[in-house]
Image 1: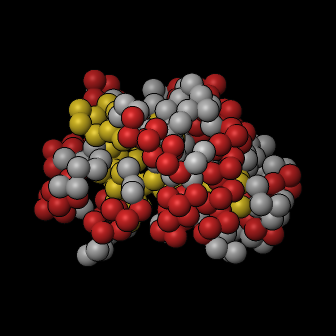
Image 2: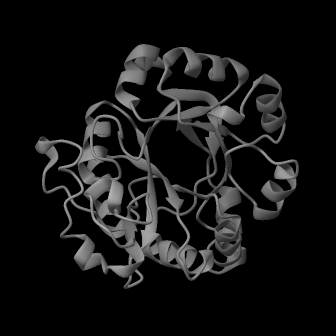
Length: 275
């Protein structure tokens, strides 16, 4: 899509409300993280959005996994970048979480898009940069989303700690909304948000207090906090103006908060094209 047309589409489309609670890596405390089983659990718990991480396999295919290696999730050595997506699809990343999840494997981004369509889940896609650099990962993810993101869902928010990833997306695939991901907001966060044309601000819970949230909200962008598992903390963040929280226990948090607060009253973003 030409950049000028994409920007027009972004400005013309309705804003999409964000949920109060987003499943972190699916439902990381109750199912293997970043797996189809985790997304299924989040959907069963009534969570409308999930967050997941994407890296490039050796064949350049985006796969859904957080770590650069398989040591924590599968007990194996070597890096993700050394294995093809076909090889990764044969590796069990569920058994170490629990025997009930044995044979759960690493999905590709394309497979995940199809699965989310079936579940009716929207997403925050976090890009982990490739060894060759963030631009390669950004382009591969954008191409996959262009081909595979379901037209039945609002566009996902694409975020990254590597802001060169967001710069590549802003220049080459601006139709996919971007989230500025920060552990603690640096002094020049507002300038970066403007330059990268982001749709949302994603901040570590430890980097937030009432004044910081107020400063972030002055940008007129929704503020999302990670990772929040306690209802009392979530309520405090919402009272300060945070629009959504990422949680490892999204179902339990929703139940504690009450399902009437599934969606934020004010937080929203402008979606890109669907399909």
